[in-house]
Image (cartoon, rainbow, N blue to C red; front, side, top):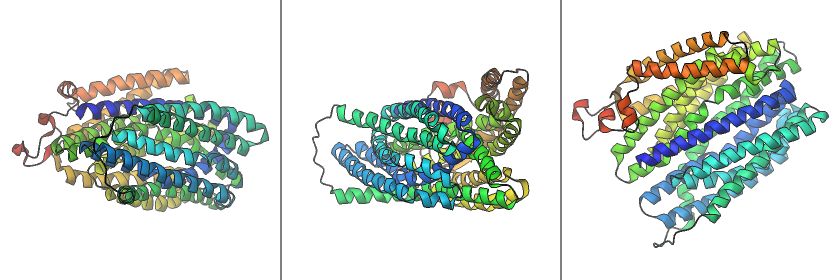
Length: 531
């Protein structure tokens, strides 16, 4: 189980990083091609699409992954396959439903958010809801089998196809205006989801099926009930941020208008936030989201298979990796905000670059908070704690909407970034408190958070000095990031936050490193992160 978890997590992280790099490369020429106005229409369509996608897919893949893993651990392969087929049919129906909803209500939605031209990208992205829903079912099934390869390959195919077709159609439609160019880009999303569906469906069809020796007596109704029991809480929680993002576009635009900005200026500022700064800030999250996706079925299988002690050690490892990923990403984006944006978006004007850089700096705390929250969500869901992440997100959403309007009226567009950072900080804090109680963590904070935090701060400061010595934007970012990674690793070893013994023994999964409720009474029934 340990090998499956670590190798699966590593594979998803690698595929996720590569997919994100392709996605980032896609946004660079796309942003340069269609400009801030086009990106505003593109990003205005995305929160609506994301909300409907969450409603149709968010909770079900995790539920399928968890329930399939649970049945496989019990030796019930036939039940696992039957459960998957029920989930696939359900996701097909939901995908068709929300595709129709977006088609029918796109004009009205675009009017409500104050961007009527956003209707065109909404219409072209609508069919992708059907394909993405079915892809989610297949990915959940394979992840439940602890086979991360189909998910990884389909992610890479999806991003590669989006890169090619999105840019092709954006350029093709550009002569008709920014809104049509944005529609061409979202058409690429639909084609990419269809391509990902062909990959996972093909893998399922052409995989040699083992003959089932046992009969499954569970009815489709009972399986559907169980799927919904697990998926509905996750779906509700996953709906929070897309709803907030949709409301946020309304809040941000109208708050800027109330500040005296023109409609075009407000759209451009929102485009700089949502189309340039936010995507960069969200890039590191692919690491921890991949980690969380891998840990859910692993923790479930370990718990069901009477290996709870091992499951808890896996959870501790997951949290540790999440923190170590989030810290350098947050400080790196803060200290290198301008070089990164200059490299990615060379056509930004001096004023736009200054605004986007300030927004990215303001968003940098959210990178760490989101990394921690995503990791904790995977751990909590792996242990069956489905409601805790939802409560954390609701708290964060209330904080975000309240602060965003208040702060935008005082510091302009930067207030929206401030609200986002506060949102994820509140969510991570709540989930962290619950996780500490669940795993009974009472020590180890110095070496597993505060010293790495200081190491990451020094790393970022060092990287900014290196970046200023190199004029070429690409070389500046590449050399400074590479040097920063080396410095960060050295500091982690020097401070004792990371040890060679952890790497040799499975990155800290040995009993001595993590303790045990049953086998280490000297810790007073509490876990320690200190090796």
